[in-house]
Length: 70
Image (cartoon, rainbow, N blue to C red; front, side, top):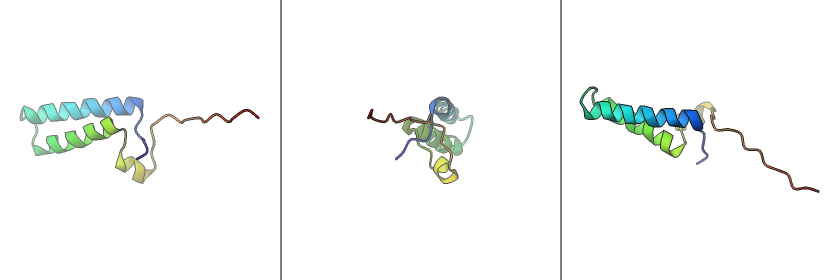
């Protein structure tokens, strides 16, 4: 699994997931809050989003590989 969720996106997903789960726990939202909250939280924790893969998105910073000196 290649990481495709980067810094700010990752933090936003974790916070949104926690918020949705908290709202569901206090019965402010229905069952969808638990489900969507868990999915969003998991994508933030694992830095991987399947939908991003399907759509070709990647919010991770580009890695530059250094070439060996010749």
